[in-house]
Length: 302
Image (cartoon, rainbow, N blue to C red):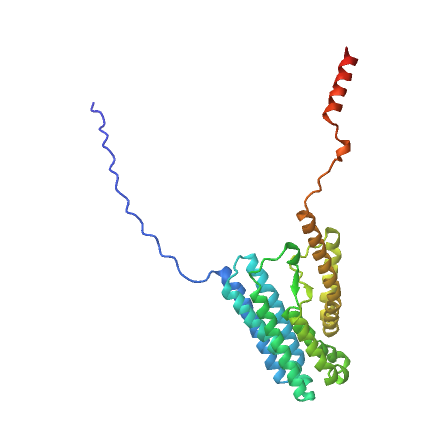
């Protein structure tokens, strides 16, 4: 019987696979925040269109939608790690139009034009202040801040400034434009809101705010009540939110100064060297006294 003959296996050399070239372009993580920024820009431009046709309520809604998109794009960029210099520049340009030019144009067509040249100056001053505020914000992006200062803005942010600027219009929807839309009220109000944006007042940013556990359920109930109020009484609710934010400015300044003083005190404590304890010369035993003490101790032991 013949034994089976095992033939050695023939191994073929595998050809080295060529790496597939990667597609160049922006990833979804970088693209999605920019899409939201463009939507905010479109909302601001649409507000200008509605203002030209005197559709004031739709214009205000567009400003609110632009503020929502502006709040989401930055948070989603940080969540997806999609931050980029292009996105930061696009966001600033969008904010200038949506929260600078659009509110100024709306307020001018609604009430400021009744003041003549003074009303136009107030509208331009507000738009310029919004641009300066955003330019200052971009110039400080690379500045290292202490940890306690991350929860504060320098001056009123542009979306909040836009909401405060159109606050007389929102109140006028319910109370009537006779008082809220009077040039004697609207002109100084618009100038004041522009001044708040370029001011150095520390304002709450709410980015790093943490809700204590015991306040989670009441906070959710409050959100539900706020949503119901926006549906039933949208203009009074928006007016209340604007006035509440305005009332929070003194508290933000006081809290900022309190944290600043605490940080300075801690820094001074760390830099101050520990005081050395100095023993008076009279309390230090001399060599003769030390020798006598040793002799007495030796005699007592003997």
